Length: 462
Image (cartoon, helix red, strand yellow):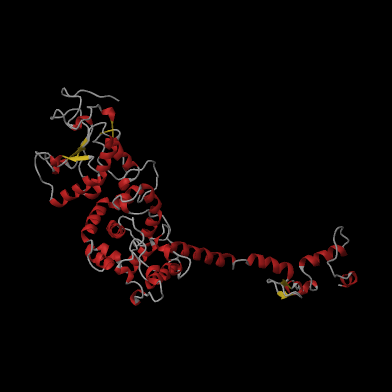
C-alpha cells in the first residue's frame, strides 16, 4: 500500500492523499454490476461510495455503463479520482459541463444525499456542473467519515452487512432513520422485533407499503416515542366517558380504554373488536384479551397489534399501493391533521427503499397454525389417531383398547381392572401375558407362575 505525489500535489481537491492502485479495491455488493472498472480507496470511501452506487442504481436509475473510479492520471491536477475517492456514474449520459439530468432524477439524488448525511458530494453543485460525479465530501481523517461508514456497516440502509450471510431486512439503524431518530438506539433495538413482526402480519411487502406504514405510525406516535395517549385529562379526554360510539358504557371506561398503541386504539368497542380479530389471527391468547388487559395495547410485545388490526381491517395497503397519502391520512386521522409532516416522513421513507422491508423468512401465526394442522392430519392419516399405537398394544395384550373407569368406596375415579382387561375368548378369557404364564407352568418351565386368582386345577383342565 502506498501513496504518491501527482502533478506536484500530495492531496486531491477534497483533502485525501494521492494514492496508488494498491490502496484501492473494487466494490463487491451482490447484484451491483459494472464496478470492476472503478477502484475505490479502501476504508470509509469504499464503504460509503460503494453504498452510494448501490443506492443510486436502485433508486435513481440503473447503472448501465462502466463506473469510473481511481485513475493514475487525470486532466485535472487535483482530481479526486487520483486519490480513489470519487466515482463517475453513467458518464456518457451526463457530459462534464452540461446539465442534462431530468428534474425527477435530480430530486431522487437529493433525497439520497440527505440519507448519506453529507458524506457524499455531487459534482452538479460545482459552478461547472459534473452531473456524473460523486465524491467523498469530508477530508481524510474527519471523524464523520468513519462514523457514517460504521453506521452503514451496522445495517443502515440495508446495503452492507458485517458478515456474509448475515440476516437481511430492516435493521435497528434503518428503523431509527425511518422514525426520525427520536429515541435512543437501545429503545429501537427493543422495539424492532415486534415492529417488523407487525409489518409481516399486515402484509407490508413493498416499499410503498412500508413507507406508508412507517410515515403514518411515525407521525401518530412521534417516531414511536408515544405508545399511549398522554392523559391530562383534557376536555376532549373527559368526553370519552359515556360515549356510546366508542362503546364506553361502564363507569371509568373513558380512561380505561384511552388511546394506546402507535395508532391510538380508543374505546371499549374498538378494544373488543381488536381483541376478537387478534385472537382469530393467533396473536393473543383470548378473544377479549385487550378488554381484560388494556395496558397490553401499549407494551413492547403486543402494542403493535392494534396498529395491524386497524391497518388490515381498514384496507390501508390499498392506499399505500396507490401512493394515496391523503386518503390514508383521512382513514387514520379522520381529516388531514399533520399532513405536511406525514408527507415529509413518507418521502424520506420512500428514499430508504428496500431497506425498510422486514425479513421474509419468518412464519406468521397463521402459517404456524396451518403447519400444525397439516402435521396433525398427516400423522392421523399415516399412523392413525394420536395414541393409537398404545391402544393397539393394549388390545393385543388385554383384549381391550380402552381403559374403563369406575368409582371406589371413597368416591375416587379408578380403573376397573376386570372391565379394562377382559382377556381373549380364545385364551379362556385370559390376557396374553396371563395365558403365556399358564402355558409356562403347564410345561414346567422354571420361573413361570400362575396369575393371581388362577386355580391350578382349572388351568390343567383347560
